[in-house]
Image (cartoon, rainbow, N blue to C red; front, side, top):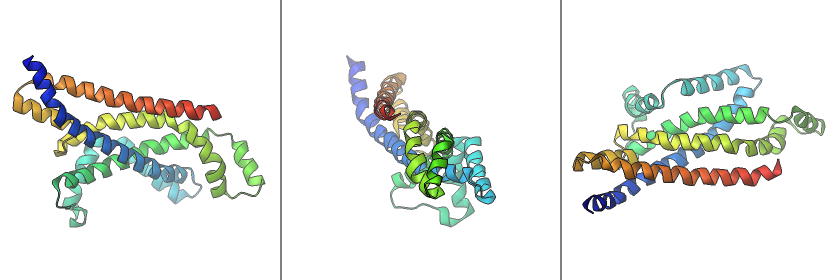
Length: 225
């Protein structure tokens, strides 16, 4: 009975941490998807300079650990120049904003490859037909190719979202209180490792909910394939 009471008392701080985990994931993946569209188109561009820049960006963020990127943005950049120092007057946002930037930039690199693959999976004949009808390249991409590619993006973007959701635990390394940091705080104050049980269950619930959402979206839009 005492153990159950302890677990119940741990729920509020864990739920508070889950808001940070979910908020960071939703915001960073959303921003990453928007940025990734430009990166994917840039990598597919015939302009050599643009192609090389976008390819280098994707290679860098896919080729280095997310934790190191987080450390670089949070610790190293402010040492490079005071311009990169984030001071909002609120310790939470001073940590949340660099975490958001790191996760968004990292997610953009992975989503760019997803989008590129989805665009290239569209039959080239549709693009050629659009050009024959007088549509420019930007119009062809915006009106014909990209809308069709979006339907094929849902499963891999859903997987990327779940990966970011779990990787969000890395923000505990900069003292941002997400689920993992809240769990560690509870463990250190109570000397009880049992807190990992409700923490993992909470992760499973959140993952299951978002997996269901993406599954519903995939099922809905697959009707049009």
